[in-house]
Length: 370
Image (cartoon, rainbow, N blue to C red):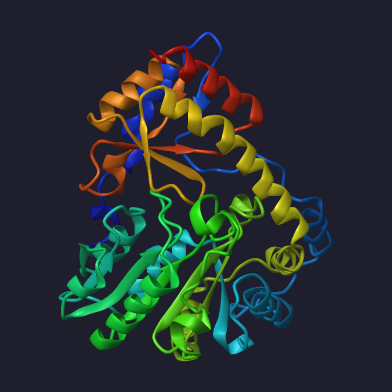
């Protein structure tokens, strides 16, 4: 299978609903895609501007300053001490890494790539790109022999589900039994809301309580798009098993996958500044507190959604019917069909809209409450 064989981009199917939502007298409230709307933090933008004299090729491996900043961030924010520059690697955003990791690891026909049942579609795309077989299974005990790569996602996109340390440990143990690489997509880890995650950090697959200090076979994937409003910078990284990181680095050097030098400088500064992350989390907390009860008042049940940027909701009917209802209110959501065949009655609502638009959506939803 090649890139030309991929199906049409799924979000094109949402266009008619977007057009209907735009006809609302007060305009559309677009809650379909999790693209940040708040400004890039000034401290990060200043770092980018200061690094614009970028006449030489950037380092695929990342500058020493960046790799040290990534390692220090894992120790400070994720409870993962002891990482060195050999354990980490910057990437050109996280989506390209997710899509290309099966290729970079040398997977091909006959290999199995496991991913969650409610899943970001790029896990499936990356497997199909190399003729591997994608398989949606949540329970590690059901991961089959022949699995070469396992994706887990905590907090989950779209469902906001968090895997605790015991669940992560079970995943690590099973992946090692299979001889599979376990890649944990953790891009929403700074955005915990409910249950234990209201007051405690969302754990990483690299947490020593999960790994006993052994990173063999493990990768943590992280992006600054959400916590730092850097989606336009394409700023992300991996950390974990130095042998896997080295292998991925070699492949990326051959392919020319180099984060731009000014972006690397900005990333290092962003990773060292916790104040802007806390401020952004509070913005999302406020929006969630406005939107969530309004969605429930309108007759939706919210499942999981204990962390991350989304509300995973259902009113007990097909997601396209729910999208139609919301479009008539001028609200655009994402259908559960986009995240695998297992949740056809769910929709995903993003918190990435302005305070004013979130308030508008909440008012329209409450007006429908019986």
